[in-house]
Image (cartoon, rainbow, N blue to C red):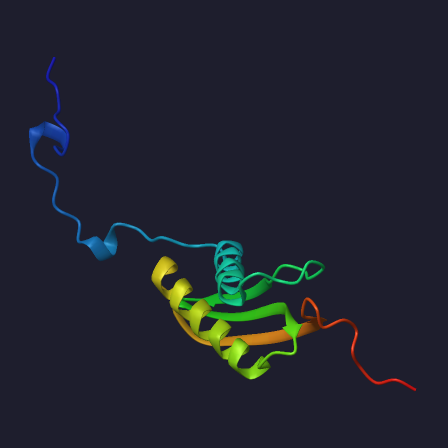
Length: 126
């Protein structure tokens, strides 16, 4: 009885080396990318208001590209444009670094504004 060592084919001959690009593929599910993007949005927003929903993300992955839509709630008053830009930048960086995908688009949808602590319900009165 003969034994075949690892990396050897029939008759004890070594198997030909397979180039890395032909060994297989890694596919990361849209759902996984969505969770990573939502977590990155949470990191960028910081501590939310007590009754604020956690940021969520919708993702469309095609080839090595992810297009992301973030849904979040912010404290008010705040510089909404600057906060959204920070979220876009952080989400694109984190998804790119952790998943290795290009992120050409991060759309941020502010679903609701919450009065900042101590602001009360200031608004129009009759």
